[in-house]
Amino acid sequence: MKSVVTALLAIILLASMFIGRHYMGFVDLAPEVVQSRYANEESEFITLSGMQQGINLHYRDEGNQEKPVLILLHGIMASLHTWDGWVESLQNDFRIIRVDIPGFGLTGPYSDGIYNIERSVDMLDQLSDKLGIESFFLAGNSMGGYISWNFAAAHPEKVERLILVDAAGYPFKPPMMLELFQTPILKDSVSFFTPRFVVTHTLNEVYGDGSKVSDDLIDRYHQLMLREGNRQAVVDVFASIAHVDSSKIKQLKVPTLIQWGEADVWIPLENAQKFAQDIEDAKTIVYSGVGHIPMEEVPEQSANDAKDFLLSLIEEPRAIEALVVTPVTL
Image (tube, rainbow, N blue to C red; front, side, top):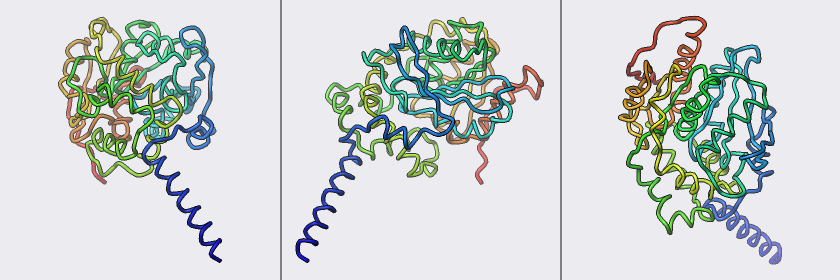
């Protein structure tokens, strides 16, 4: 009996240590582990070449294959899952392609650790070519927005309409969490120490309404960060976009919708106004009380606004002017 109790205590102790190591982020998760949890029947992987150094890009090709193509790019520390709400709302009206940008989600990092805007633009260019897509609608959030408008400037013939959701593009004072990732000692520790409570704090910061941050949401963000190589990629990407180049924004001629969370503490609302001033005839929608990721926080509302803007090319619905939208609380 004593030996059984001892064995049980040993198992409990080992389990506690294992759970604690995961909670504190002292472990890397193997690619096959995170794929088993966060890939689904829509998940596909495609090998790219050239600047992509054989990266195996995770993407999903969903929705109505007979409808216009909409490509979605997520922000930093996120994944293609950030667009779940948009896919649910828009799948009947668009063929939707969403991507785990290299360094994030299930795609994983570049082997050489080099991240720059030219490489990101090339990634999207290669993907669209391999899928045989000549032109498309493009939407991006935060870092994904930075890639989106740079892609539109480099390949205007491919982008029919552009949506920038709390996009990076102008210099701004980063919040404390982002500054920590640029602090020499702390940024070096991120690759082997990423506690779950840090992810919880970050999500509460980027949501205007912290009550919408669920345990499942925290788990997904945390576990995808723990995918081998992704944590170091976050540090490297932060370094690469520390000094953004805004010079090409005024060159944009593509019809553009700017969607912004009024309570965004990462990229302030004044940057939305700068985009609106620099992009000719850009339309702006500001969501009252919403934070940095409106497509997660108010998915149905932001998706419907995107649909109105994109399909106005075909159906000419109501014109979207600059306005402030107050989310409906159910």
